Amino acid sequence: MKEKLIEIAEKIKDLDPVEALRFFTAEYPGKIVFSTSFGWEDQVITHMIFANDLPIEVFTLETGRLFPETYYVWNRTLEIYKKPIHAYFPQAEALQEMVDKKGPSSFYESVENRKECCGIRKLEPLRRALKGNDLWVTGIRSEQSLNRHDMANLEWDEQNQLIKFHPIFFWSLAEVKEYIKKNNIVYNTLHDKGFPSIGCAPCTRAVREGEDFRAGRWWWEDQSKKECGLHATQ
Image (cartoon, rainbow, N blue to C red; front, side, top):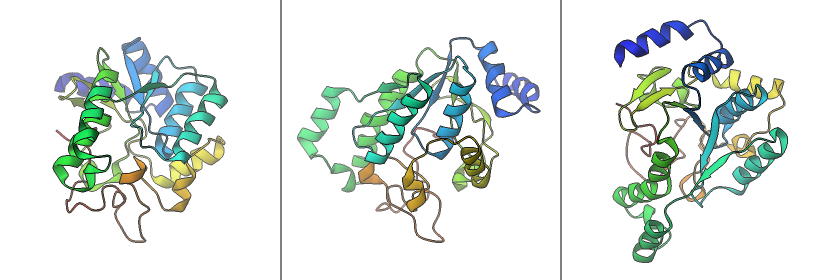
């Protein structure tokens, strides 16, 4: 697979994000999905896909704990592009069992509990969303966190057994904002209130000046890697 990725990387190295996405739709017809959480980066890629009628399925993980502002962006995106965004929900029985035993806020009590919640609300639905596909498109950018500097814009996801492509991996935040402004793309207003990374409402706060990009995620935990496992580094 390493040789295959090198070969593909060579073919797309001079392509812009839309051209690269179009290349992949020809290489993996009907086997490409894009995951959105309706943040800045994801709205950029959603626009690229929908505005260019690219045959890529767009999906989101409906954890049941999203911000009202996130639901607003979701709904406006549907209204603007008239394209479907598939929602994947947690398995009801697993979620009910966890809440019955530990209550609705067990994730604050320990890292183990938080990972359990992420596993039920995000990781298991993600596996269902990715199943049977060959390529997963994401909105990851290199500068978003330190552990992402070692990643590449094209990689093999061993956990989910498919290729991952990050179309705007090398973009700066300024470039993302400029693209949104130029194309009049709807975005989450929480970004304007100090939320660079937006996840579930109980687990996300605004960051303070000088804090790391992901300091607002699971802020009560003392750990260096603020990741839930969706994009686990290999």
